[in-house]
Image 1 (tube, rainbow over the protein chains, first blue to last red):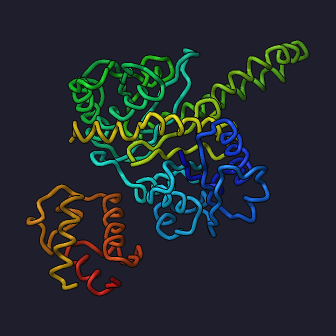
Image 2 (image 1 turned 45 degrees about the vertical axis):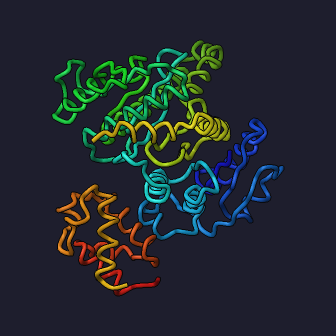
Image 3 (image 1 turned 180 degrees about the vertical axis):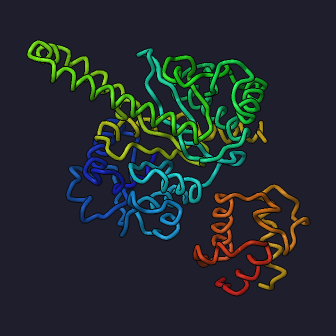
Length: 333
Length: 81
Protein backbone atom coordinates (compact mmCIF):
# COMPACT_ATOMS: atom_id res chain seq x y z
CA UNK A 1 0.00 0.00 0.00
CA UNK A 2 1.44 3.30 -1.09
CA UNK A 3 0.52 6.65 0.45
CA UNK A 4 1.25 10.05 -1.11
CA UNK A 5 2.36 12.51 1.57
CA UNK A 6 2.29 16.30 1.40
CA UNK A 7 5.50 16.76 3.40
CA UNK A 8 5.24 20.56 3.50
CA UNK A 9 1.74 20.98 4.98
CA UNK A 10 1.24 21.91 8.63
CA UNK A 11 2.61 24.28 11.26
CA UNK A 12 5.68 22.16 12.00
CA UNK A 13 6.35 20.74 8.54
CA UNK A 14 8.32 19.02 7.33
CA UNK A 15 9.84 17.90 10.68
CA UNK A 16 6.65 16.49 12.26
CA UNK A 17 5.52 14.90 9.00
CA UNK A 18 8.83 13.12 8.46
CA UNK A 19 9.04 11.87 12.05
CA UNK A 20 5.46 10.59 11.88
CA UNK A 21 5.92 8.93 8.50
CA UNK A 22 9.09 7.17 9.66
CA UNK A 23 7.35 5.90 12.80
CA UNK A 24 4.40 4.67 10.72
CA UNK A 25 6.78 3.02 8.24
CA UNK A 26 8.51 1.20 11.11
CA UNK A 27 5.18 0.17 12.62
CA UNK A 28 3.54 -1.17 9.43
CA UNK A 29 5.83 -3.11 7.06
CA UNK A 30 3.13 -3.18 4.37
CA UNK A 31 3.22 0.60 3.87
CA UNK A 32 5.27 2.62 1.38
CA UNK A 33 5.32 6.39 1.07
CA UNK A 34 5.95 8.95 -1.64
CA UNK A 35 6.91 12.24 0.00
CA UNK A 36 6.40 15.46 -1.95
CA UNK A 37 8.19 18.58 -0.82
CA UNK A 38 11.29 20.73 -0.79
CA UNK A 39 13.86 17.96 -0.76
CA UNK A 40 16.61 20.28 0.51
CA UNK A 41 14.55 20.56 3.69
CA UNK A 42 13.03 17.08 3.73
CA UNK A 43 15.98 14.79 3.10
CA UNK A 44 18.28 15.97 5.92
CA UNK A 45 15.50 15.08 8.37
CA UNK A 46 15.18 11.49 7.19
CA UNK A 47 16.80 8.88 9.42
CA UNK A 48 16.21 5.91 7.15
CA UNK A 49 14.80 6.01 3.63
CA UNK A 50 13.52 2.43 3.53
CA UNK A 51 10.17 2.34 1.69
CA UNK A 52 10.27 6.10 1.22
CA UNK A 53 10.39 7.75 -2.21
CA UNK A 54 11.04 11.47 -2.55
CA UNK A 55 9.72 13.82 -5.19
CA UNK A 56 10.75 17.47 -5.44
CA UNK A 57 7.90 19.98 -5.22
CA UNK A 58 8.97 23.54 -5.91
CA UNK A 59 6.18 25.29 -4.04
CA UNK A 60 3.70 24.75 -1.26
CA UNK A 61 0.17 25.85 -0.52
CA UNK A 62 0.03 28.01 2.58
CA UNK A 63 -2.86 28.76 4.91
CA UNK A 64 -3.10 32.22 3.35
CA UNK A 65 -3.71 30.84 -0.15
CA UNK A 66 -7.24 30.90 -1.55
CA UNK A 67 -7.99 27.15 -1.86
CA UNK A 68 -9.43 26.74 -5.35
CA UNK A 69 -7.07 29.26 -6.90
CA UNK A 70 -4.08 27.64 -5.20
CA UNK A 71 -5.01 24.21 -6.47
CA UNK A 72 -5.40 25.56 -9.99
CA UNK A 73 -2.28 27.69 -10.07
CA UNK A 74 0.24 25.95 -7.76
CA UNK A 75 0.56 22.78 -9.76
CA UNK A 76 4.13 22.30 -8.54
CA UNK A 77 3.07 22.40 -4.88
CA UNK A 78 3.56 19.42 -2.59
CA UNK A 79 -0.19 18.99 -2.01
CA UNK A 80 -1.24 19.15 -5.66
CA UNK A 81 1.61 16.88 -6.78
CA UNK A 82 0.71 14.34 -4.08
CA UNK A 83 -2.91 14.42 -5.27
CA UNK A 84 -1.80 13.99 -8.89
CA UNK A 85 0.13 10.87 -7.82
CA UNK A 86 -3.10 9.43 -6.45
CA UNK A 87 -5.01 10.40 -9.59
CA UNK A 88 -2.37 8.73 -11.78
CA UNK A 89 -2.50 5.54 -9.69
CA UNK A 90 1.05 5.90 -8.36
CA UNK A 91 -0.30 6.07 -4.81
CA UNK A 92 -3.56 4.90 -3.25
CA UNK A 93 -4.23 7.60 -0.65
CA UNK A 94 -3.34 11.17 0.23
CA UNK A 95 -2.17 12.48 3.60
CA UNK A 96 -1.73 16.16 4.44
CA UNK A 97 -1.56 18.49 7.43
CA UNK A 98 -1.92 21.56 5.21
CA UNK A 99 -4.60 24.11 4.26
CA UNK A 100 -7.96 22.35 4.81
CA UNK A 101 -9.81 24.22 2.08
CA UNK A 102 -7.07 23.48 -0.43
CA UNK A 103 -7.09 19.82 0.52
CA UNK A 104 -10.85 19.71 -0.03
CA UNK A 105 -10.42 21.37 -3.42
CA UNK A 106 -7.56 19.01 -4.26
CA UNK A 107 -9.64 15.99 -3.34
CA UNK A 108 -12.66 17.16 -5.30
CA UNK A 109 -10.97 18.61 -8.37
CA UNK A 110 -7.92 16.37 -8.80
CA UNK A 111 -8.76 13.01 -7.26
CA UNK A 112 -12.41 13.47 -8.15
CA UNK A 113 -15.78 12.67 -6.67
CA UNK A 114 -17.20 9.17 -6.41
CA UNK A 115 -19.94 8.77 -9.01
CA UNK A 116 -23.21 9.25 -7.18
CA UNK A 117 -21.76 11.53 -4.52
CA UNK A 118 -22.91 15.03 -5.32
CA UNK A 119 -20.65 16.70 -2.73
CA UNK A 120 -17.93 15.16 -0.56
CA UNK A 121 -18.03 15.82 3.18
CA UNK A 122 -15.39 16.32 5.85
CA UNK A 123 -15.65 13.77 8.63
CA UNK A 124 -13.66 14.01 11.88
CA UNK A 125 -13.80 11.43 14.65
CA UNK A 126 -14.70 12.89 18.04
CA UNK A 127 -14.51 11.50 21.58
CA UNK A 128 -17.68 10.71 23.50
CA UNK A 129 -18.68 10.42 27.15
CA UNK A 130 -18.36 6.65 26.73
CA UNK A 131 -14.59 6.11 26.89
CA UNK A 132 -14.87 3.04 24.67
CA UNK A 133 -16.64 4.83 21.84
CA UNK A 134 -16.21 7.76 19.47
CA UNK A 135 -18.53 9.49 17.03
CA UNK A 136 -18.09 10.47 13.39
CA UNK A 137 -19.55 13.84 12.42
CA UNK A 138 -20.18 14.76 8.81
CA UNK A 139 -20.21 17.25 7.16
CA UNK A 140 -17.92 19.25 9.44
CA UNK A 141 -17.60 22.09 6.95
CA UNK A 142 -16.71 21.05 3.42
CA UNK A 143 -19.99 22.54 2.12
CA UNK A 144 -21.50 25.88 3.01
CA UNK A 145 -24.81 24.87 1.43
CA UNK A 146 -26.33 21.42 1.49
CA UNK A 147 -29.22 19.54 -0.11
CA UNK A 148 -31.19 16.66 1.40
CA UNK A 149 -29.69 14.17 -1.05
CA UNK A 150 -26.17 15.14 0.07
CA UNK A 151 -26.97 14.31 3.69
CA UNK A 152 -28.44 10.94 2.74
CA UNK A 153 -25.31 10.12 0.73
CA UNK A 154 -23.14 11.19 3.69
CA UNK A 155 -25.18 9.01 6.05
CA UNK A 156 -24.51 6.00 3.83
CA UNK A 157 -20.78 6.73 3.56
CA UNK A 158 -20.44 7.44 7.28
CA UNK A 159 -22.25 4.21 8.05
CA UNK A 160 -19.99 2.17 5.74
CA UNK A 161 -16.94 3.81 7.34
CA UNK A 162 -18.14 3.02 10.88
CA UNK A 163 -18.89 -0.56 9.86
CA UNK A 164 -15.54 -1.18 8.12
CA UNK A 165 -13.14 0.86 10.21
CA UNK A 166 -14.78 0.92 13.63
CA UNK A 167 -16.18 -2.62 13.27
CA UNK A 168 -19.73 -1.70 14.26
CA UNK A 169 -22.10 -4.17 12.61
CA UNK A 170 -25.03 -1.75 12.40
CA UNK A 171 -23.81 1.76 13.09
CA UNK A 172 -26.37 4.05 14.72
CA UNK A 173 -26.89 7.03 12.43
CA UNK A 174 -28.34 10.24 13.88
CA UNK A 175 -29.33 13.56 12.36
CA UNK A 176 -28.16 16.70 14.14
CA UNK A 177 -31.23 18.84 14.68
CA UNK A 178 -32.79 21.40 16.99
CA UNK A 179 -35.01 18.87 18.76
CA UNK A 180 -35.54 15.13 18.89
CA UNK A 181 -39.10 14.95 17.50
CA UNK A 182 -39.43 13.86 13.86
CA UNK A 183 -40.91 17.17 12.70
CA UNK A 184 -38.17 19.36 14.18
CA UNK A 185 -35.93 21.59 12.10
CA UNK A 186 -36.25 23.51 8.88
CA UNK A 187 -37.58 21.98 5.66
CA UNK A 188 -34.13 20.58 4.78
CA UNK A 189 -33.81 18.69 8.06
CA UNK A 190 -37.40 17.49 7.95
CA UNK A 191 -36.82 16.07 4.48
CA UNK A 192 -33.53 14.48 5.53
CA UNK A 193 -35.27 12.86 8.51
CA UNK A 194 -37.80 11.24 6.18
CA UNK A 195 -35.11 10.09 3.79
CA UNK A 196 -32.91 8.56 6.50
CA UNK A 197 -35.85 6.82 8.09
CA UNK A 198 -36.95 5.36 4.77
CA UNK A 199 -33.47 4.14 3.81
CA UNK A 200 -33.35 0.48 4.83
CA UNK A 201 -29.56 0.36 4.55
CA UNK A 202 -29.30 2.67 7.56
CA UNK A 203 -29.83 2.07 11.25
CA UNK A 204 -31.34 5.52 11.74
CA UNK A 205 -31.84 6.47 15.40
CA UNK A 206 -33.52 9.84 14.81
CA UNK A 207 -32.67 13.41 15.62
CA UNK A 208 -29.80 14.28 17.93
CA UNK A 209 -29.56 17.64 19.67
CA UNK A 210 -26.18 19.38 19.77
CA UNK A 211 -25.99 18.80 23.52
CA UNK A 212 -25.91 15.06 22.80
CA UNK A 213 -23.30 15.23 20.06
CA UNK A 214 -20.71 13.60 22.32
CA UNK A 215 -22.93 11.48 24.57
CA UNK A 216 -22.77 8.26 22.55
CA UNK A 217 -26.34 8.47 21.26
CA UNK A 218 -25.13 7.63 17.74
CA UNK A 219 -22.03 6.29 16.01
CA UNK A 220 -22.40 8.59 13.02
CA UNK A 221 -24.07 12.01 13.09
CA UNK A 222 -24.93 13.74 9.84
CA UNK A 223 -25.51 17.44 9.48
CA UNK A 224 -25.33 20.15 6.86
CA UNK A 225 -21.80 21.55 6.47
CA UNK A 226 -22.62 24.98 7.86
CA UNK A 227 -24.11 23.65 11.10
CA UNK A 228 -21.49 20.90 11.38
CA UNK A 229 -18.66 23.40 11.20
CA UNK A 230 -20.27 25.73 13.73
CA UNK A 231 -20.98 22.89 16.17
CA UNK A 232 -17.49 21.44 15.82
CA UNK A 233 -15.81 24.80 16.40
CA UNK A 234 -18.08 25.52 19.40
CA UNK A 235 -17.23 22.12 20.88
CA UNK A 236 -13.49 22.63 20.38
CA UNK A 237 -13.74 26.14 21.80
CA UNK A 238 -15.61 24.94 24.87
CA UNK A 239 -13.11 22.13 25.49
CA UNK A 240 -10.25 24.60 25.26
CA UNK A 241 -12.02 27.09 27.53
CA UNK A 242 -12.73 24.45 30.17
CA UNK A 243 -9.12 23.23 30.26
CA UNK A 244 -7.87 26.80 30.60
CA UNK A 245 -10.38 27.63 33.34
CA UNK A 246 -9.49 24.50 35.31
CA UNK A 247 -5.80 25.35 35.02
CA UNK A 248 -6.37 28.96 36.09
CA UNK A 249 -8.56 27.95 39.02
CA UNK A 250 -5.96 25.49 40.28
CA UNK A 251 -3.07 27.92 39.92
CA UNK A 252 -4.86 30.87 41.55
CA UNK A 253 -6.40 29.17 44.56
CA UNK A 254 -3.51 28.90 46.97
CA UNK A 255 -1.07 26.19 47.96
CA UNK A 256 -3.67 23.53 48.68
CA UNK A 257 -5.12 23.81 45.18
CA UNK A 258 -1.65 23.73 43.67
CA UNK A 259 -0.89 20.53 45.56
CA UNK A 260 -4.20 19.17 44.35
CA UNK A 261 -3.29 20.17 40.80
CA UNK A 262 -0.09 18.18 41.10
CA UNK A 263 -2.04 15.13 42.20
CA UNK A 264 -4.62 15.31 39.41
CA UNK A 265 -2.11 16.25 36.70
CA UNK A 266 -2.03 12.72 35.20
CA UNK A 267 -5.84 12.62 35.04
CA UNK A 268 -5.94 16.01 33.33
CA UNK A 269 -3.31 14.75 30.90
CA UNK A 270 -5.60 11.86 30.01
CA UNK A 271 -8.46 14.26 29.29
CA UNK A 272 -6.19 16.37 27.10
CA UNK A 273 -5.10 13.27 25.21
CA UNK A 274 -8.70 12.25 24.66
CA UNK A 275 -9.52 15.58 23.07
CA UNK A 276 -6.30 15.72 21.07
CA UNK A 277 -6.27 14.90 17.38
CA UNK A 278 -3.50 12.34 17.97
CA UNK A 279 -5.88 9.95 19.68
CA UNK A 280 -8.66 10.03 17.13
CA UNK A 281 -6.90 10.18 13.77
CA UNK A 282 -7.58 12.72 11.08
CA UNK A 283 -10.61 14.12 9.30
CA UNK A 284 -11.55 12.11 6.21
CA UNK A 285 -12.78 13.76 3.02
CA UNK A 286 -15.49 11.22 2.28
CA UNK A 287 -16.88 11.04 -1.22
CA UNK A 288 -13.73 11.19 -3.32
CA UNK A 289 -12.15 8.31 -5.21
CA UNK A 290 -9.38 7.57 -2.68
CA UNK A 291 -8.76 8.07 1.03
CA UNK A 292 -7.88 11.75 1.54
CA UNK A 293 -7.19 12.49 5.18
CA UNK A 294 -6.20 15.68 6.91
CA UNK A 295 -4.59 15.96 10.33
CA UNK A 296 -4.73 19.22 12.23
CA UNK A 297 -1.84 21.47 11.17
CA UNK A 298 -0.59 21.94 14.72
CA UNK A 299 -0.56 18.24 15.63
CA UNK A 300 2.44 16.18 16.66
CA UNK A 301 3.91 13.09 15.03
CA UNK A 302 1.56 10.91 17.09
CA UNK A 303 -1.32 12.33 15.08
CA UNK A 304 0.55 11.60 11.86
CA UNK A 305 1.02 7.97 12.91
CA UNK A 306 -2.59 7.46 13.99
CA UNK A 307 -3.88 9.08 10.81
CA UNK A 308 -1.65 6.92 8.65
CA UNK A 309 -2.99 3.92 10.58
CA UNK A 310 -6.49 5.10 9.70
CA UNK A 311 -5.55 5.36 6.01
CA UNK A 312 -4.03 1.87 6.14
CA UNK A 313 -7.24 0.47 7.62
CA UNK A 314 -9.31 2.17 4.91
CA UNK A 315 -7.09 0.71 2.21
CA UNK A 316 -7.13 -2.76 3.75
CA UNK A 317 -10.91 -2.74 4.10
CA UNK A 318 -11.31 -1.18 0.65
CA UNK A 319 -13.71 1.26 2.25
CA UNK A 320 -13.82 3.59 -0.74
CA UNK A 321 -14.54 0.68 -3.09
CA UNK A 322 -17.38 -0.38 -0.78
CA UNK A 323 -18.85 3.13 -1.02
CA UNK A 324 -18.46 3.23 -4.81
CA UNK A 325 -20.13 -0.16 -5.19
CA UNK A 326 -22.99 0.66 -2.81
CA UNK A 327 -23.81 3.99 -4.41
CA UNK A 328 -23.64 2.46 -7.87
CA UNK A 329 -26.11 -0.24 -6.91
CA UNK A 330 -28.27 2.09 -4.79
CA UNK A 331 -28.08 5.57 -6.29
CA UNK A 332 -29.39 8.38 -4.10
CA UNK A 333 -30.90 11.36 -5.90
CA UNK B 1 -11.23 20.40 -34.61
CA UNK B 2 -14.19 22.22 -36.05
CA UNK B 3 -16.62 24.10 -33.84
CA UNK B 4 -19.21 21.42 -34.54
CA UNK B 5 -16.84 18.68 -33.35
CA UNK B 6 -15.98 20.68 -30.23
CA UNK B 7 -19.67 21.24 -29.49
CA UNK B 8 -20.33 17.53 -29.84
CA UNK B 9 -17.49 16.65 -27.47
CA UNK B 10 -18.48 19.27 -24.91
CA UNK B 11 -22.09 18.09 -25.11
CA UNK B 12 -20.92 14.59 -24.23
CA UNK B 13 -18.90 15.91 -21.29
CA UNK B 14 -21.87 17.86 -20.01
CA UNK B 15 -24.28 14.98 -20.53
CA UNK B 16 -22.07 12.72 -18.40
CA UNK B 17 -21.44 15.29 -15.71
CA UNK B 18 -24.90 16.80 -15.37
CA UNK B 19 -26.90 13.72 -16.32
CA UNK B 20 -28.80 15.32 -19.18
CA UNK B 21 -29.42 14.05 -22.71
CA UNK B 22 -26.61 15.18 -25.09
CA UNK B 23 -29.16 16.13 -27.75
CA UNK B 24 -30.77 18.61 -25.33
CA UNK B 25 -27.56 20.63 -25.19
CA UNK B 26 -27.11 23.49 -27.63
CA UNK B 27 -24.70 26.40 -27.94
CA UNK B 28 -27.17 28.58 -26.07
CA UNK B 29 -27.46 26.25 -23.06
CA UNK B 30 -26.55 28.32 -20.01
CA UNK B 31 -24.24 26.34 -17.76
CA UNK B 32 -25.38 27.95 -14.51
CA UNK B 33 -29.09 28.44 -15.05
CA UNK B 34 -30.00 25.61 -17.45
CA UNK B 35 -27.76 22.98 -15.86
CA UNK B 36 -28.09 24.27 -12.27
CA UNK B 37 -24.31 24.25 -11.94
CA UNK B 38 -22.85 25.64 -8.71
CA UNK B 39 -19.29 26.88 -8.20
CA UNK B 40 -17.86 23.38 -7.69
CA UNK B 41 -19.60 22.09 -10.83
CA UNK B 42 -18.15 25.02 -12.79
CA UNK B 43 -14.57 24.39 -11.63
CA UNK B 44 -14.91 20.68 -12.35
CA UNK B 45 -16.27 21.51 -15.81
CA UNK B 46 -13.35 23.85 -16.55
CA UNK B 47 -10.85 21.21 -15.37
CA UNK B 48 -12.53 18.65 -17.59
CA UNK B 49 -12.28 21.04 -20.54
CA UNK B 50 -8.54 21.41 -19.83
CA UNK B 51 -8.06 17.64 -19.55
CA UNK B 52 -10.00 16.98 -22.75
CA UNK B 53 -8.71 19.73 -25.00
CA UNK B 54 -5.32 20.51 -23.40
CA UNK B 55 -3.99 23.85 -22.24
CA UNK B 56 -5.02 25.87 -19.25
CA UNK B 57 -8.02 28.11 -18.88
CA UNK B 58 -7.14 31.06 -16.61
CA UNK B 59 -9.72 31.86 -13.91
CA UNK B 60 -10.52 35.23 -15.50
CA UNK B 61 -11.40 33.49 -18.78
CA UNK B 62 -13.24 30.67 -17.02
CA UNK B 63 -15.56 33.17 -15.35
CA UNK B 64 -16.67 34.38 -18.77
CA UNK B 65 -17.83 30.94 -19.90
CA UNK B 66 -21.55 31.33 -19.35
CA UNK B 67 -22.98 29.22 -22.15
CA UNK B 68 -21.90 26.05 -23.92
CA UNK B 69 -21.30 28.23 -26.98
CA UNK B 70 -18.84 30.36 -24.96
CA UNK B 71 -16.93 27.20 -24.06
CA UNK B 72 -16.91 26.04 -27.69
CA UNK B 73 -15.61 29.41 -28.90
CA UNK B 74 -12.92 29.46 -26.22
CA UNK B 75 -11.69 25.96 -26.99
CA UNK B 76 -11.77 26.68 -30.73
CA UNK B 77 -9.70 29.84 -30.30
CA UNK B 78 -7.15 28.19 -27.98
CA UNK B 79 -6.75 24.76 -29.55
CA UNK B 80 -3.50 23.05 -28.56
CA UNK B 81 -4.16 19.48 -29.61
